[in-house]
Each structure stands twice: as structure tokens, then as C-alpha cells.
Length: 384
Image (cartoon, rainbow, N blue to C red; front, side, top):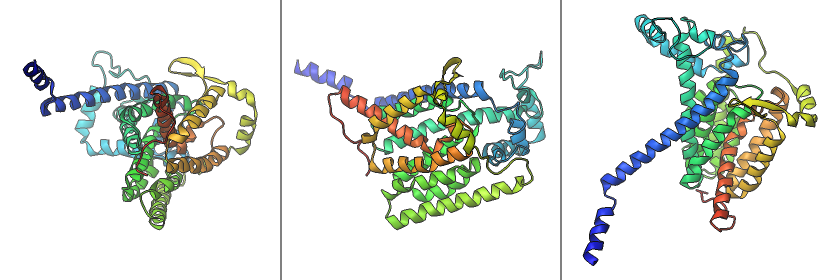
């Protein structure tokens, strides 16, 4: 019997080859699940808003051509990447790739995109690069947020689930508006928090260029990183790094604005009075919206507020003090900006709070797991 037991143990032992296969299978499963989650979120966004092709103020064509109104036209990272990618291709390749997008028998798009600009041969190739590139930004953000949660000390299951759950709620936050740069913004903010958690803060400088080119709000997000950076660096060094990154972001923003000085629109739109009237009316908490094909809750609704309250109260003790200070600082900056410059009910503009929300959601899941396991509340283990 002892010999048989030994043989069974040998047979079931994990060899390096079996371990490698298991890891590859784990990665394939993770990629598959995150792909489906990102596809659902992107479809929820695109079904609602597309690339705003019916509004000349910020349509796909206007953004690509640089004729969109300010401040939308400043968000030029993805348009510049798409224009640059097509410019690198020889004319013959552009023609061949454009032709390949259409069916030879009836001239319809193979991708079944219904946008007139997607069907326009002048824009077709760039529209498809824009479409799939925006999706890839969203997909990549899931992996970076997962790494961010792991760096914050959460276990593997919680760190994997939290970004997926958050991303599925993003189309609800886009009830009053949604834009392609919302998804690249999530990726850059997650990257900034991850770098701060790991102490690789000098990378915030080049990141500030790319992220601000995508959307100028990243300048304000950098300020909210100070409590996290401070856990890895001395006080003075932390201030210098965050301040330097903010200066880089400011310079980037000023440079990005220059080519569009004569565009219509304004640098910022003031909605203070509209917001005062909107948020003072409790009936607006009963608004509904169509998301994922269903008429359900609006981004700003009583249901949303209840869910946020649960996540904050349950997750608060499961994140580090640095993360809590980051959330408080982000709220102190973001809420006044929302009230002053954002359209009523446009909760997607609470983006400075997104990463805090992901981490608090991870804390909430940790609290649920702790109760299910019969353990009492406690702070998440982390590098603090």
C-alpha cells in the first residue's frame, strides 16, 4: 500500500511541464473572460453613442480632420494614432485594405457597422482602426487594473473580478454622454496608480504626455496620486515627482491646444447653474436610461447612489490609508469640476474617482469573502 501511495503521489505531482500548461490555460481563460467583458462594455457604449457621427461638434470625422469644437478637439491621441498609422502605409496598401473592408457583390461593409462615416471610403479604414483600437484600450485597461489591485494587496480572485465588474458598469455612467477617449483614459489612470503603488514614479513623466494628449483631465488626476506616491518615496521627493509630472501634463495640454486655436467652441463649458437646478431636483434620481438594450437605471439615480454607498462603506476599511486619502483628494477636486464644467447627470466625468472605485470595490469583495469565511473585518494586506 505504501508503494502504491508513493506511485500515486508521483503520478499526480505537478511537474514543471504540467505547471506551465496550467499557467497557459489560466492565462487563456483570463484573456477570454476579459475579452467578453470588454466586448460587452464596448457594445453598451457604442450602441448608445457610437463615435457621435451625427454631431459635427465632435463626430468621428471632425475629430479625425481636426475640425471638431473645443474642448473636444483637444483629445487627439487616438485620432493622431489612427491618422499616423494610415500615413505610414503606402497608398496602394491603403487602397487594398479599404477595398477589403467591403463585400465585392454588394459593396456593403463586412463589419456591419452602420455609421455612414464607417461606410465612406475616405474614412472607412481609419474608422475601423479607430473602432478596434478603442476596444483594445478598454481590454488592456482590465489587465492593468487587475495588476493595480494585486499591487494594492488584494488576493487573486478579488483582483481579477473587481475590474470586470467595474467595466460592466461604465456604460451606465455614460447615460448623459459617452466618448471614445473614456476608455483610453481608464487605461492611463490605472497605469498611473499601478506605477505609484510599485514606486516606479519616474514613469509618470512620459505617461503624463500621452495621457494628457488623450484628455486634459489627467493633469488633475496626477495631483490625486500624491498620497500613494508618498508611501514609496520621501515627502519632498514625492512632491517633486508629482509636481514635475503635473508640469509636463500642463505643457502638453498647452502644446496640444495650439493647432486648434481657431476652432469654434470654448476651452471649457460652464454648467454651474444647470447643475444646481438638476441636482437640487430629487425627481432626477428616478430617471432611467437604455443600457445593454434594456430600459434600466440612469447613471445618476437612486439605485446608483445606493450601490455607491454600499461599496464605500463596506470597502473603506479594506483599502490602505493612502488609497483612502487618494479617494478623498480625488473627490475634493472632481466634484467641484463636475458641478462647474460638466453637463447635468454626466457622471462619466467623475473619472478621477474611477480607480478609487475599483479599489473600493475590491475592498467590498474582500469584506464579503471575509464574512463568508467567518473572519472579521480587517484591512487588505498591501505594500504600506
